[in-house]
Length: 206
Image (cartoon, rainbow, N blue to C red):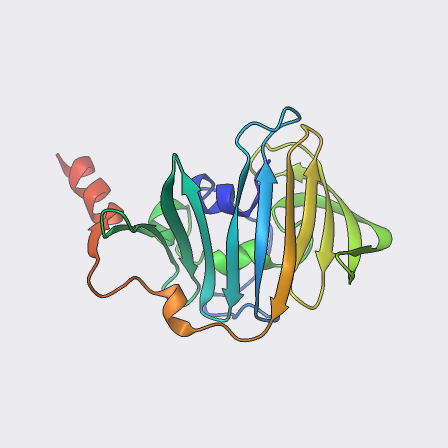
């Protein structure tokens, strides 16, 4: 399932069917929450962690093989950062370098329910974790993912739960609405940067 963390890490070359213009801002409400996700019916690839979303972008904190990992997407800079706190380094991936069309924006991943699908159908209303949501059926993924059902929170501007037909699942819990510190969406000043865009351009020029 292309849940939020997987989208950040691996789905950056996708094309989108939304019409956001460059510079348009995310329109949701700032919050922090716990997240959990699995990538199949057997529960493989299970992850959990903490997520922060505000006007500057989104941050997700988890662990991989016992090591802390932080993923940040930045709306204004239109890039993605992968922080490795144990090594005090981070990787920067410019979004426009990874997609066709220089107008592509990371905000498109938050452009309403079923944002990364060609077809959507509203099934009704439901409650998730005490919050009112809209239940949507999503089909025709732009990234060849399985069809899915989303429970979309219109106030927060993001699904609180998503379940795909392959058994994958993503859910937010312990939601705390409110502005998030701006430094959450920037790398620490003492981290060394690895610019993946520049590295790839150098490799292509060889």
